[in-house]
Image (cartoon, rainbow, N blue to C red; front, side, top):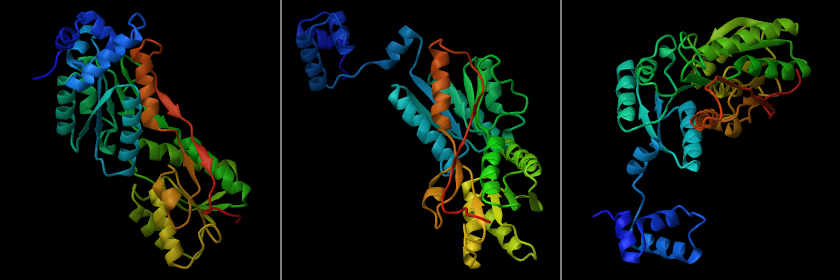
Length: 336
């Protein structure tokens, strides 16, 4: 049987209020009394009834996170950082995985049914133009924060909906500045998913940045997806062409790793003969065969959680967050 606050109070000969204050470390309860209460609580296996507390303060201490999968690097990075931030704040995190609009709506309804105060959402690329989650959460009036991408018709900062995204155009310019300083003028570009907003912003930054610096994008734009296999396959095609780039700019670290693999297999020195850059600064960039020059961003999970918490505490209004990146130079880039 669960031990109640009243049971502790009766066993210690104290009032329920005194025991409650002792457990909350209230300043008007003596040190000795607090020690007695804590010892008794530990001995009898007492823990607070958060459900009852949530009814009193109208805050459940629960938030939900919905992902398209847990196996991808982007899913793991968002969920890991959000979980750490929530744990540090004493907030419990409900995690759901959904691969279709129907599953998204079902998962969110389940989270709301358990009292989630807010929903954090890393959407599938195919949901950028319409989101079942936006419809369900919007009707309930809960805060909803998108990570990395968001529906085209959502109005960030309106009501309780916002997003946290990376400045991908800025990332392209950071890399181009670096390569230009190293003397590179002929670069190749391996982009991401053609339907992804972040890929489109990175491509726009590349096209404008290359033109502004008097550089040339050899072979035009190659949108190869999001995985290493796409980068490797496209790099093999480039190696078969008469004119080769001196540098390859990739939209993420996975594609950069794939391109590097193809270069190394062909006996081409990465960072020596051909420079390669990525975006993300994940494990592939840090621990691949050739440490990768890339663009590192602050944790989106932490940024999003901090935004929601300030809104929850009334310190800030809901607003979009565009996170700036920082160039990390490693061995995959060198002079042209």
